Length: 128
Image (cartoon, rainbow, N blue to C red; front, side, top):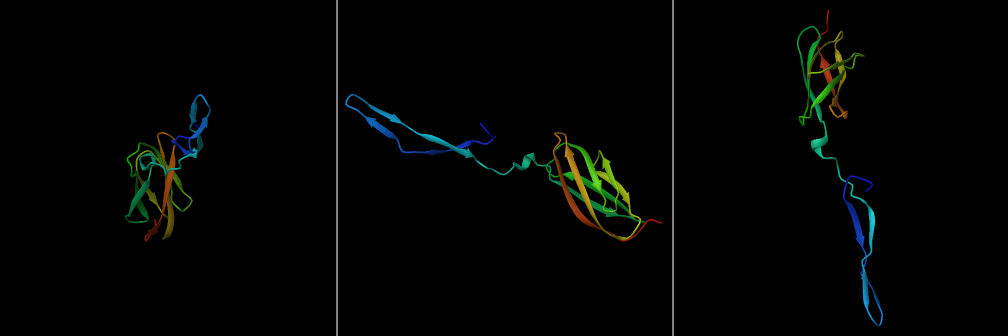
């Protein structure tokens, strides 16, 4: 089979060949391809994160996989040019300037699959 899904078939009318001595029947099936289905949500990582700003531009991010899949690494892109990897979901980051930053969390699971999510994060204080 060419894909993981079950094949679908078109069935044509039974053809009968008659002769003086016997009747034969044949059923013609033609493979039309694989059924296209959406990915099973249990196989998706579905990353998400929350954040909390404290003082002086310090923000603590908390990432997770909403499906509970085993995570190998969390990759954080903070929107200010800084990138960090962590092996737990929590990661602190200090911003040097006030502003709105596009933060991206990419999660890689233990099978090597990667998915990401991004949010705009407003920082109201800056480090000294």
